[in-house]
Length: 44
Image (cartoon, rainbow, N blue to C red; front, side, top):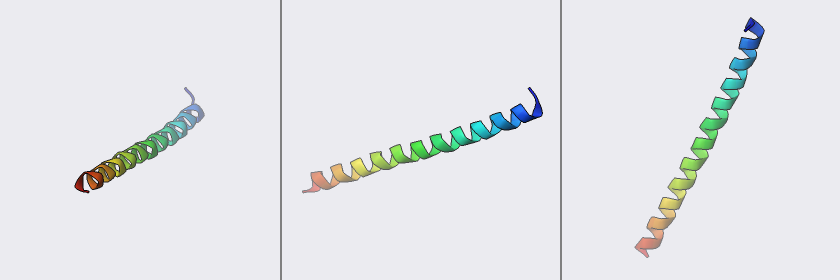
């Protein structure tokens, strides 16, 4: 691999990592929201 190819791959992997972190955060937020709603319903 050339230095330029390595830089391109690094940029791609960093972007992919950022995307996956955001996706994980969204999934966790949805799960938390669902749990909160479920708890509110069970209290009523």
